[in-house]
Image 1 (tube, helix red, strand yellow):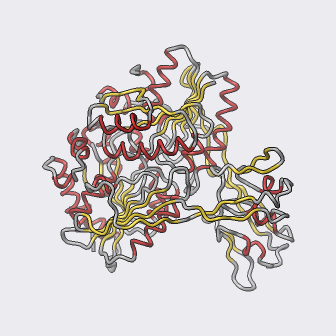
Image 2 (cartoon, chains in turn purple, brown):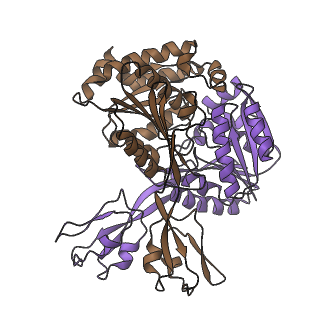
Image 3 (cartoon, helix red, strand yellow):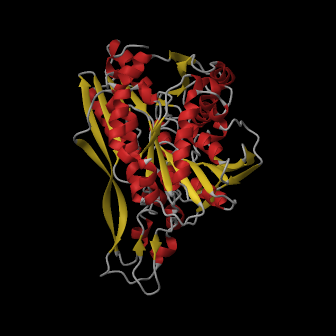
Length: 274
Length: 303
């Protein structure tokens, strides 16, 4: 199975659009494709494919500490060792755990000499599967509630995707990442065979593309550029960066009303363009 | 003007320092374009400070017509990472066992860190029986300050590629911005609804939500709203590129009701203006008028 990551840094350059167009191209060639929407904060691929997220296949949990007041001796070892400052203790009182600051590292319940800290599970994400047709599946990961750290959701959703890909004997796994370059994007990209950086011909696109290429270099990923909205701004911004970094612009996608139309009607899965 | 009255009532009037956050969930819908334009318009009558909270891919300065040349650059550290002293390490594997994030792997009997999985919690340092692990500060980002651009200061930051901690970096630039003398702080949030967006919205007095008339734009606005509501921030909505899909625009307008602050047309010439690094407010594009209308409403909402 070939794994391809679709990313870009800047938002709205067409990551999701390109992901689906690429999936369409591969399906045309008779390949079985899984598209993984790893933008857990704002997943959109399902909308572009006219799907609904109804029943989650898997729930993703985070672990949080919870105090057992019967066992706790108020010794303060947990408070002193917590690096996230997520445990607060007033003199002579039981410690209070602040979930917003807790990374779920587990050190406190590991260190507690009384084993007075229990582990509480909280849902932070869910994973959905949509069968578009017999050779095209969409897996969507989405955060639940207000979640600070979304990287772990991506990593766990990926395990689900990998097992599904194995079961279905998929030829391609396309991973559509979130905007930016934060932990969620990095986690989505780790392990892919090839990354497409989708950009637009403006100084904004160029600025963010350069940053993204630096990240992809650090991750040691073979990379190609996709220039979307080709011809709308000034193409030379991107062509220059491609030359300097010795990276191919694999696709140039001109601005088209047709794409916008298929996009907003949730029919992008039907458009053959690449 | 119903919208103005409605929103004005929602805002605490005694504030002399006012923070407006521009957010959208979906990327590329026009946050920075609007943030930069509104900053320039507001700067005519108010003391403004602009803060670019998109530390992953900061673009605010480009919309203000500025590329490069900062007055001050300051490297910062917002997280720590374990460093292993292999002279002391016995390869016992305790660190691998305690790590909740799977950041260590055993290679040839010794732990190897995959920094992309490390959350910097320091559990490994404390658990290591041979005291072979120590947490060291990581330079994750740089804060960049432009003292004056179009009449006001801009504070921005760049997360170094491959590093994490954008939420904490946003906290730091906000702290830095607070030291300036200002009446209105304009914060441009990144896309998404995760840590940097939460950090940007925390403590805001008003949120200006931008969307585009597509199913994605609408869905993503609804993904950010819980964060806005969590902090109890009053908000208004702007629909950008409304005419690429009038049907969806109408749907979103209906949903927004009294909270609709305005709409902006799609104009290909925006691409050409930004290609020349020309702020929208300095062009003669029709969108400028539409943004001015939004500005006038916003102006009335402000204390």
